Length: 337
Ligand code: RAM
Image (cartoon, rainbow, N blue to C red; front, top):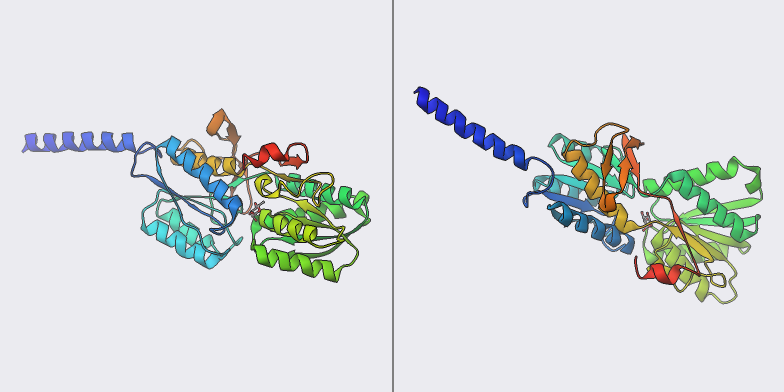
């Protein structure tokens, strides 16, 4: 009997050693990290997915993408539940709503799934992979408007969906900046409209603004889908003198950016890096390397990120500052993303 027990213990110990060796996040082909975008057709989101996939390959884990057709939070809830049922190890999600996903994400975490947000944060996520500092983004947008209006005049904002946390936090920070500095007192923010990251809706909203506000000088679009639709609409409208500011993909905006174009300059960051960083953050979380504010992890190219306090996710990291694209550099960047 004693021999049998000793044998059983030996087998159990051997098994637990193998299990420990396999326990870290990566390395095991059966581990899957999932990415859920705001919607499946936004080219900005596809760049993010490509970065996430490449990083998953480097980390030795499987990767799947599941995204809703449109920017619907209900569809995202269904998708997250499906992914949990599929036993994925982690989910990175660009949230379509600041609060509606909370219970679903918490339930996923209770089942042992690591959950991070990227691009657009929501309650229930354990860490937000923030593409750039909110105030930094808002400041470059406000300064673009200030510069393109010549310091005074009417401007409007064309956003994506009205529930997207990233869009709303940039817009709120723009308001704070404008109200907090007399320098911007002569700027008149006439309206904020929403194109839902759909090309046609963004075009329609641009046309509505043009009709409603004949003295409009600048339309500021903190969305890559919106800025493209807006630039195309302005360019195709004979005699229209509106300038377009915002956040755009250089590959999509190359024909519209430059001193003599509808969009003198615009900003963005590298969406491929945002996706890649999310996969490395997940890996670090599962490995137990990060957990507390102040802890650090290393992502691609030996870049080190420090975990900071966040809101609505408890924690966040900031991938990098916004970068300016103008007539001099747009052609080079258009080949990258
Ligand atoms: C759009 C989306 C996305 C945003 C970029 C700048 O593609 O709204 O959430 O981060 O623009």
